[in-house]
Each structure stands twice: as structure tokens, then as C-alpha cells.
Image (cartoon, rainbow, N blue to C red; front, top):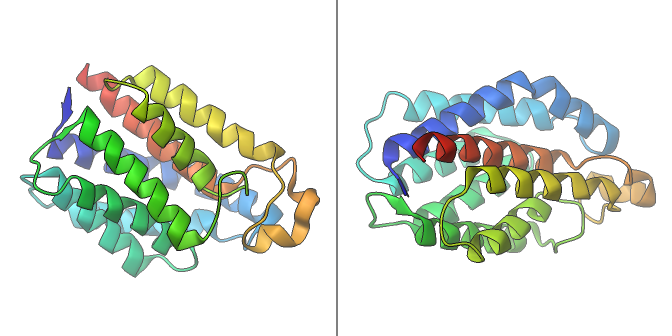
Length: 206
């Protein structure tokens, strides 16, 4: 299976819908351990992504992802815009030159995105950040040979839920230290939403 530009576009449009529906939930998670604006930022950013990509015709997957990255970087404040923008930019760069995304190149792109997030956020795995979803997903995809919607969904959900037991080491949540244990990391939940909507697109294509 290969993901075509229209499927990448549909993935991001469905993700936007999920962010709009869960804006208040994401904000409540962030109010517990962060700045309290994560849901608002993600909903605003992905609405702008929708406005950009929905009317545009794309002939390769890289351009859809690059437009997404640039929109998030320019329209979303705080840490979310630069971080999620970096992830999509790395994924775009990894797939540059390909009309469609086959599994191997997409998996390599997720690995590049995870490494990009580490560098941009100066974070390591286990510090209760969004990379606690991206890096496990990169490792999982590297171990596979083909897209599997069910497994992408379950692995991303497990990685997201694991952040609940972590003590935050980065961002405002780090001030809470061990008191952050018991709370999900909002960026990890948003990352899970991205992988869960990707899983839905994969399932439709199988």
C-alpha cells in the first residue's frame, strides 16, 4: 500500500476534525500541568492547515506535508507550532521527490520527525513530552514491513497512555516534578490523535 497525496490530505483534514472536537479536553489536560492553551493552539493551527490544503490540488505527498509544516510554524504560538511543524517538515523532506509514500519511506520519515523533535525540543524519551509517542512509533514502524491500521492505533495509544506515569522534565510541567505523575501529557495526546487518524486512513486503504 502507498499513501497518495489525497490520502495524506484526508489524514490531516480528519486530524483537524479531531482537534476541533477535543479542543476543550486538550486544554483541560494542559491546564493541569502546562500553560492551558494547548487545545486552543492545536485547534487553531489545524483549522489553518485545513484552510490551506483543502482547496489545493497536490501531485506529491511532500508538498502537502510541507504546507502543513509551514502553516503550523507560522500560525501556532507557544511550543506546539514549532514542534509539530518540525515533525511535518522532517517527514516532508524525507519524502521529497516521491509522488506517493510507500511504507518504507514513510517509516523513515517518522524516524526523521522523531529525531527532529528531539533536537528542536532538546528532550529525551521518558521526559513526558510528545516525543514519547513519536519515538516509540518510529521504532515500531521500523520493525514492520507494511502499514497496519490496527497496530498503529494500538501502539500510539499505549505510548500516549504511558506518559501518565512519567514525571515531567520539560516545559512548565517540569515545575510540578512528581506531581505531574497521573496526568497525560497534552502533546502526547495530540500526537496520538495524529497517529489514530493515520490508522483510520490506512484501514480505508486496505
